[in-house]
Each structure stands twice: as structure tokens, then as C-alpha cells.
Amino acid sequence: MAKSTKKRKKRRIRYDRILILIVSFILLIALFIGAIRFVMKLIIPSKSNSEETITEVSSSKKENKPIDENTISLVAVGDNLIHETVYLDAQQADGSYDFKKMYSHIQDKVKQADIAFINQETVLGGTELGLTGYPTFNSPTEIAQNLEDVGFNLANLASNHCLDEHETGIINELEAFDQTNIVVDGVYDSQTRFDTIPTFDVKGVTFSFLAYTYGTNGVIPPNSYNVSYFDEEQIIEDVERAKEMSDVVIVSAHWGDENTFAPNSFQEEYAQLFADLGVDLVIGTHPHTIQPIEWIEGENGNKTLVAYSLGNFLGGMLTTDNAIGGMFCVDFKKNGDSVSIENVEWKPTIIHFEGDQDDILNSRCNYATYFVSDYSAELAKNHVLNGYDGNVVSLDYINEVTNDVIDSQYLK
Image (cartoon, rainbow, N blue to C red; front, top):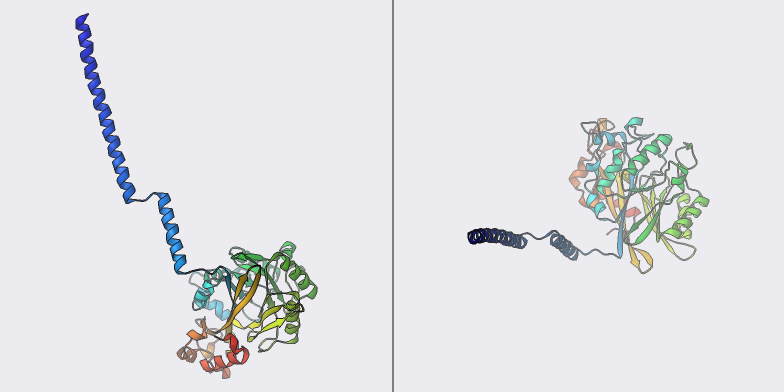
């Protein structure tokens, strides 16, 4: 019995030593892993620390370039008029269409604005309906995405050409714009859409957008809801509803006589109606030439800002007057519960294109819109319209027309 007990004691001692060695080894591994983790934390910040760093960097950048939360900037340009020469110039090798290069010289200003408006003069029915130019237009649907890429986020679709491809053209156009974040008004594919007033929020201010056209070149829509026409009763109802749901009401007005530099009586009468109803801003399009900016007093003493016509923004019309346009710029200023319009400015633009004067309707012309401030005498000299059918394209002539039409207080 005594020998057996000693043997058990010896075995127990050996087992104890082995157990101590195993525990010690585990502790050493644990200490080693802990040391590695500690070092790694010093070198690589955790996910939460990384996110906090990004936030701080972002905040620092905002401090360097402060955002004025009380100011909302708007820019507006006129007619995106897609003649055959324009879409042929935009055609790519694979048969698709890309117009972005034509807008490249003005896109920085567009992208900087909180709200950027354009008048889509020609319907985007797409290639399935057959592309066409003047006088019955049908344009590529790619334009919708191109406009968003350039920075536009507000578009009028109510024009005298919006029914050039009848209801199918409107349906295709709306499908194209529905793939973007651009707010549109003026044409509709249902009564529900017609009855819905587009609204959008910017920096805590709610805007409503309404659009109307004087006509559709004699084409009658198949449904009463397809196009928004000038109609006093409808306008009164729309504006009253818009004012109930928004802080600012913007109206796009497709009106006026083509190739004229002054508003006609129709424009003046409806401008006064918009003012009497309390509309804040009216953006005019259609004449294909520029027309004045005017503040109009409403019956309640309010002031409505009206830009009667912004001229052409892009297009292939064959006179210098039709190539001269403007970017209309304003700031909406928040002051408590009220919003005012300030810093009204007109930035002259010019549509530049080159080509063969003897075959001007068929040549690829390298269309591009420039700010006149960035345009050069050399470019003007090379403009295909310079000398064509008595046209003069020069900085002097562009500035002369602009100064004759636009009040100098807005030319900064």
C-alpha cells in the first residue's frame, strides 16, 4: 500500500507540473495576443474612430467654405432647341447621343446653383419615333440624363412643340425624365399627374413649380390633361393651391412673339395676373430672342420678378439674334418665415457653331454654348453665321443687343 501511494504522489506531481506548463503557455499566448492588439490600435484606428475622423475632416472643409443656409441660388437658361444639325453633332459612333460637351462651358455655374432651370423646347420622343428637326421636332431621350449630368434639376416641358409626336412623345419624354431627379411640369400622361403640383424643398424652403404654354402649333391633345395651357381659371386655381403648400411659387411661361425683343400684350396681361396672385418668380421662354427683366407690383402690394424671355440656350437657328441668350440668376433669401428675391443678375450667353456655310444645314458644326465673358473675338470670327446671309457675329454686336434689351442694373 505504501509503494502504491508513493507512485500516485509521483504521478500527481508530474501531472501538476504538466498542467502548470500548459496554463503558463496559454497565459503567454494570451499576453502576446493582447500586446499585438494594443500595438495595432495605436497604428490603425477603429471603425468608429475612423468615422469620427471623416466627420471632423468634413466639418473642417465646410468651415473653410461656409454654406449660407439662408441663401438659395437659382440659375435659369432658355430654349434647349434641338435642330437636326444639333442632334447629328451629338451622335456617337455606337448610334447613341451625348450632348454634354455642348453644355461644358457653362456647367460649372449650373452645378453651383441650388436650383437650375432649363426650357426643354423640343419633345424627347426618342429614336423609336424617328428623330426630326424643324418644323416638327423629335429629340433623343438621352438629353434628359445629359441635363441632369450637367446639373439641371428643374425643367419646363410645356412648349408649342410638346405635341409634335402627339401623346406617345409625351409618354416617352416623361419616362426619360422619370429616370432622373429633375423636377418637371407642363405635360402629363394622366389626370393624376396633371392634378399634382410639383414641389421640392431646398434648405428648409418649399418651392412649387407651375408651367404653361400659349399653344401647341394647332395640334389638339387626345386628353385634356396632356398639356398645361394658359387658362386664367386654371392658373388661379393652381397658384392658390401652390401657395397653400409652399413658401415660393415659380412659374414657367412659354409665351410671346418669336424673334422679338419686347413682350406683347398677352405676356403683359398674364404677367400682371401672376403678380396679382402672388407668384414670386416668372421665367419666360419661346421667342428665341432675349426680352427684358421686370418687377411687377401685384394688387396686394407684393412684387413679382418676371424675366420675359431668356432666348435660346442651344439651337441651330440661323441668325445671330437667335444665338444670343442669357443665364438668369437670382438668390432667394430666408428671413424668418419670409423669403425675398435678391441679387438679380443676367449673364449673357452665345451659341457657337462652325462649319461649311455652303452646306450649313448638313455639316457637323461643333455646337457649344459660352458665356459671353468667356467668348473671344477669334471664336466670333470663326462662327459659321459670321457673314452668312448678312449676319454679324462679334462681341460688339452681342453686347449691343444685350445692352439694348436688359437693364444695366442686372448686367454685372
